[in-house]
Amino acid sequence: MYYVDSACLQDVFTLMLCKFMKSYPKYFLFTLFISTLIFCSTFNETFGQSIELFEFPTEPVLFSSIEDIADIHCKVKNTSTQPVRVWVTMDTSDCFNKHRAYFCWEQCYSYGVTDPRKFSTGKPITIAAGKDTNAFKAYIDPTAIIPEGIAGKSTLSFDFFNDDDPSDRVSARFTFIIGNASSIKEFNAESINIVYNTVLDQLFYTGNASIKSAFLYSPCGSAIDIHSTLSLHGTPNGFYGYRIITEDNKILNGGLLLHR
Image (cartoon, rainbow, N blue to C red; front, side, top):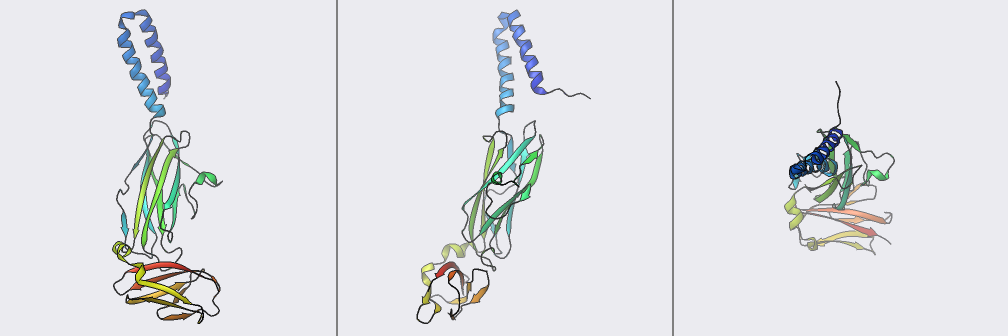
């Protein structure tokens, strides 16, 4: 079986139309119309958008657990008649700073990799003509900084683009709501404060909210109960995270710098 490139056929047909127009000038407008159709077809094939996204959420996705890694999937399709090498880049500017984001495309990239082209191990995926792939996955890890997990909202933006023509691209934004979304919005951070007493070398929390639990997290991730008071004698200087939960399940996450 033999295959003929469609672009080659278009070139041959266009040449035939030119000869026809010279031989029969009175059919100039008709020939011009047919030639325009061929040009538009070729233009759309060469310069049109070939990447399409489908089967992905367009609204924020709620993940009730703050102890599990959240993921969102998306299918990517090549709508052209030629194979396309597709790269993916990530923008984390709207990611909650207590969450960690990463994604998979051909391979799973570690936290901090937003543009695989900058790494020798980065690879695009070649999608055959008319085919799709479900290789893309975006992840939010709410336990990367505090092992028990942190509630919050993170939005990730992705660009999918043609390696041969970067202008041939589509974009998508995925919003992860981790934990109780209402508690994130309603909690008044000013109602509770973490106070360091330099004389006693102790931490206290103050405020009028009823506290169910309170933990301080060391740089290595270990949790220290500070439900009442905590002596920091012998504790190294450094940045510490804390997590306070009230009796009505509102959450306050934050950090403090211990410097004596």
